Image 1 (cartoon, rainbow, N blue to C red):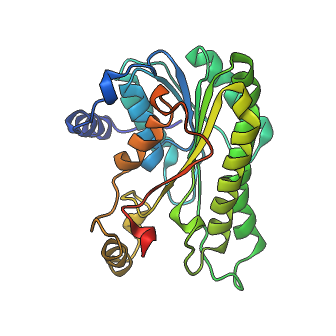
Image 2: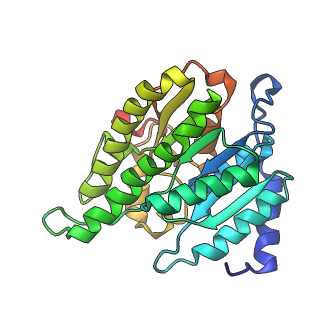
Length: 281
């Protein structure tokens, strides 16, 4: 993995330190000493989730893959450095969630590094937008295999661990588009809708082992991906949101981590929308 520039790491550390973080309800510390896997946590929502786990004393393992036009390895190294500054166990490695072999290897290594796995957040996802009559097989397969099959691989791999310890929390990052699709995202919408179906099925099958499985469906979130959208599209999204703003990654992270606490122990099979009311229109 390429090392990030020291100034970039320092800037990220300062940004994290100055963020005002709400405290867990009632000062809960039920995540302290546990271990969490957050897929695709080099940047964006995944990074925010990983940081929130670490702030609460939970060890974090996360994976990354290189993507065209993005230096993900450097971003992953930056995230790893910031997580370690929070004095929790951290494990980072390359892993393509589309590969069962790589996933099984990653989960075992993560469990060893963190001293156990108790939480799984399936955040890794990609998009390859095109009108469906112009969408080629590769664009369809890459998105579905990453967003849906990748989550299945992770759930299947941690299931024996969670069942054996009779405890586990799984949160899948779905999307508003699973329930309110737009133009040119047939592959993305289908993958996220499938992820909601997988959430429901896994909740039924793993519930008897005291494993909670839920999904969070964000709307538009301020990440590096949205920076590439047109100003017109971003303004329209903001205007269609009753709260009149786009979500910050931390807005999503707070809900995800809440679902992994004992405060949410009787919530399973749910899809929680974190879209500022955008899906109401």
